[in-house]
Length: 76
Image (tube, rainbow, N blue to C red; front, side, top):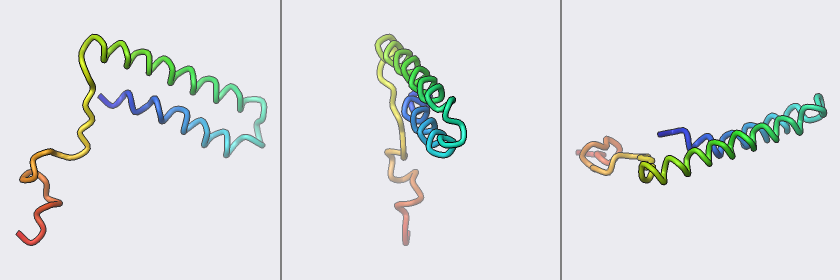
Protein backbone atom coordinates (compact mmCIF):
# COMPACT_ATOMS: atom_id res chain seq x y z
CA UNK A 1 0.00 0.00 0.00
CA UNK A 2 2.08 2.91 -1.27
CA UNK A 3 -0.73 5.42 -1.80
CA UNK A 4 -0.29 7.07 1.64
CA UNK A 5 3.20 8.15 0.58
CA UNK A 6 1.52 10.44 -1.95
CA UNK A 7 0.06 12.50 0.91
CA UNK A 8 3.53 13.93 1.46
CA UNK A 9 4.72 13.83 -2.14
CA UNK A 10 1.98 15.97 -3.72
CA UNK A 11 2.72 19.12 -1.66
CA UNK A 12 6.46 18.53 -2.08
CA UNK A 13 6.15 18.27 -5.86
CA UNK A 14 3.90 21.34 -5.89
CA UNK A 15 6.45 23.30 -3.86
CA UNK A 16 9.21 22.32 -6.28
CA UNK A 17 7.07 23.31 -9.27
CA UNK A 18 6.17 26.62 -7.64
CA UNK A 19 9.84 27.26 -6.89
CA UNK A 20 10.88 26.50 -10.48
CA UNK A 21 8.02 28.12 -12.42
CA UNK A 22 6.82 30.71 -9.90
CA UNK A 23 8.31 33.75 -11.59
CA UNK A 24 7.48 32.66 -15.13
CA UNK A 25 3.80 31.82 -14.61
CA UNK A 26 2.59 33.68 -11.48
CA UNK A 27 -1.11 33.23 -12.28
CA UNK A 28 -1.04 29.42 -11.99
CA UNK A 29 1.13 29.19 -8.87
CA UNK A 30 -1.76 29.39 -6.42
CA UNK A 31 -3.78 26.89 -8.43
CA UNK A 32 -0.96 24.33 -8.30
CA UNK A 33 -0.67 24.67 -4.53
CA UNK A 34 -4.41 24.42 -3.95
CA UNK A 35 -4.77 21.37 -6.20
CA UNK A 36 -1.87 19.58 -4.47
CA UNK A 37 -3.31 20.37 -1.04
CA UNK A 38 -6.79 19.20 -2.07
CA UNK A 39 -5.44 15.94 -3.50
CA UNK A 40 -3.46 15.34 -0.30
CA UNK A 41 -6.57 16.01 1.77
CA UNK A 42 -8.65 13.49 -0.17
CA UNK A 43 -5.91 10.85 -0.06
CA UNK A 44 -5.52 11.36 3.70
CA UNK A 45 -9.30 11.07 4.18
CA UNK A 46 -9.28 7.86 2.14
CA UNK A 47 -6.33 6.55 4.20
CA UNK A 48 -8.17 7.34 7.43
CA UNK A 49 -11.22 5.45 6.17
CA UNK A 50 -9.09 2.54 4.99
CA UNK A 51 -7.24 2.28 8.30
CA UNK A 52 -10.44 2.48 10.31
CA UNK A 53 -12.12 -0.30 8.31
CA UNK A 54 -9.25 -2.64 7.35
CA UNK A 55 -6.61 -2.10 10.02
CA UNK A 56 -3.19 -0.46 10.05
CA UNK A 57 -0.96 0.02 7.03
CA UNK A 58 2.59 -1.35 7.34
CA UNK A 59 5.57 -0.05 5.41
CA UNK A 60 8.36 -2.63 5.26
CA UNK A 61 11.58 -0.79 4.50
CA UNK A 62 13.82 -3.82 4.96
CA UNK A 63 13.22 -7.48 5.77
CA UNK A 64 13.02 -8.31 9.46
CA UNK A 65 14.79 -11.65 9.00
CA UNK A 66 18.58 -11.02 9.02
CA UNK A 67 19.24 -14.20 7.02
CA UNK A 68 17.32 -12.86 4.02
CA UNK A 69 19.30 -9.62 3.99
CA UNK A 70 22.50 -9.67 1.97
CA UNK A 71 23.69 -6.38 3.47
CA UNK A 72 24.43 -7.95 6.86
CA UNK A 73 26.38 -10.93 5.46
CA UNK A 74 29.76 -9.24 5.15
CA UNK A 75 32.64 -11.71 5.36
CA UNK A 76 30.49 -14.84 5.68
